View 1: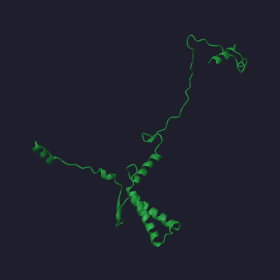
View 2: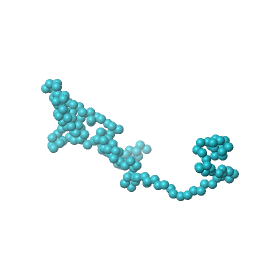
View 3: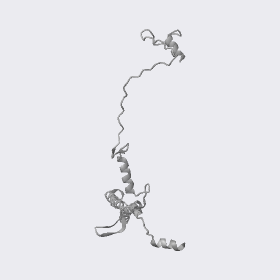
Length: 168
C-alpha cells in the first residue's frame, strides 16, 4: 500500500496559487534608474513629498527650534508619516484601496443598478375608479341631518345626530 502512495506522489502534478501576491499594494523600488533606499508604495511617496512640502511652506510657524532640530523635524516627520502609512490597515486593506472603495460607494447609485443603469423607483400614481360601499345586513341607516337645520354645537339628547356622537 505504501508503494502505491509513493507511486501516486511521483506521478502527480503540484500546482501553486500566487493570487495572494496580488493583495499587496504596488511597490516602487526604482524611479528612473535610481534605486530607493527602501521600497515605497505610491501612497507613501505622496505622503512623503506632500508632508515635506507642507512643512517647508509652514516653516515660519514651527521652525523656532534652531538649525539641526529644524532639519530633523523637516526630514523626520515625513519619513515617520510614510512609515506609519506602510503599516496602516483600514478594513484589512491598504489605505489607497480603502479610499477607492469609499469613493466608489459615495458615487454609486442610491438604489443600486439594474442592467448597468441606476435603478429608479417608478413615480407614485393615484388610482382612479369608483367604489360602492354598502352597509352590512341588519344595520339601520340614520338619516343625515342637513347642515342648515343642525347647529354646530350639541343641542340636546333628543337630537338624533348628537345622540350618535354622545354614544360613540
